Image (cartoon, rainbow, N blue to C red; front, top):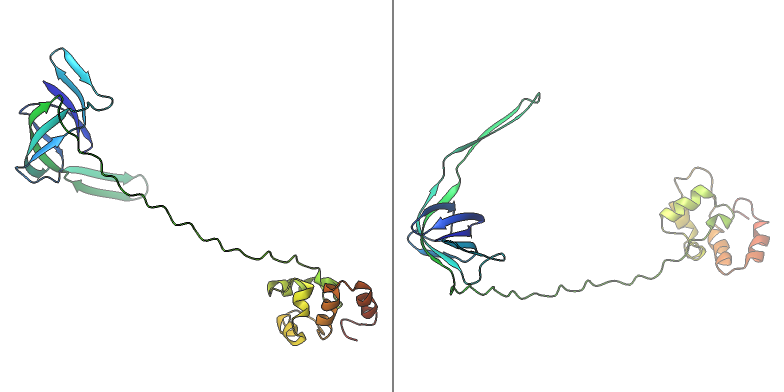
Length: 212
């Protein structure tokens, strides 16, 4: 009788009393170990194939000793790069001896049920809708460059400009070339925010560059 069984990630064809070298197992030397992922069992002309494993089948073995395999040389080279690396590797192995092949009756360990914790819902912060930007160039004395500079400072609407002191506006646009008078800008912006365009237009006709 023989069996094809998966041990430590590899498939082996094994028979009773056969010695097999497998990847290192955690079982101590001299201890018994069982493998229940049996893919095929052959007994003379009778062959049983699993789907993918045979339910109830098991291969029993005994750990003989732990050892390391023969050294394998790994050499890497890249042409015209001057790159050469030479390494040696010895695989950690475990020698086992097959003691039994059971076709049925073996009890498989029940899979551990891990509690699945629901991920906490991410808290979504509701942000107030941002006010639509106004055309600040409608204020006498404000050009495209100044409007862009004010926008970078967070002033994009007539209401925001109306609530900003003239001295603060002067500080914000200090790096913009030219002689800018900001005294009337908050008042102009207030009229624009309130929709008093006729009153604003009449006042602007009296202004020269934002100065009365």
